[in-house]
Amino acid sequence: MEQITVVIGDRLGKGQKVAAGVEKAGGRAVVVPGVAADMKLGDVMKAENATFGISFCGSGGAGAITAQTKYGYKAKYGMRSVEEGVTAINEGCNVLGFGFMDKEELGERLVQAWLKKYGA
Image (cartoon, rainbow, N blue to C red; front, side, top):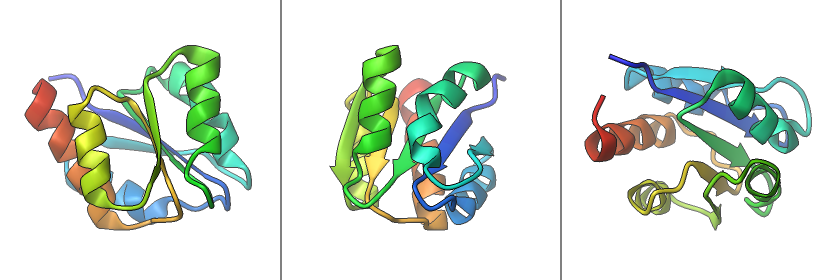
């Protein structure tokens, strides 16, 4: 079974709670270190051969748009809820941009949604 790898880039260098949720659901979380980590999301996703990526910043867009522009990932951004993220995965997106929402439930539910849609 191929493990789901989720890259997390947070403008403020956070993301540990969402990473814990990813791991709780059986995924592998890669938290990009440092401030402005959201802007490195696409680069780290490519390097890690990630399944999908999560970007956090005030608007919920900058890192996701950058990853989409640079690497052609399908992004949805400006999201503010777990449900919006689940919907984005069901729509085939692999870069998810949120306002600041470092919650364990988010990581767990997104991995579960990916597994439900694509299998292990």
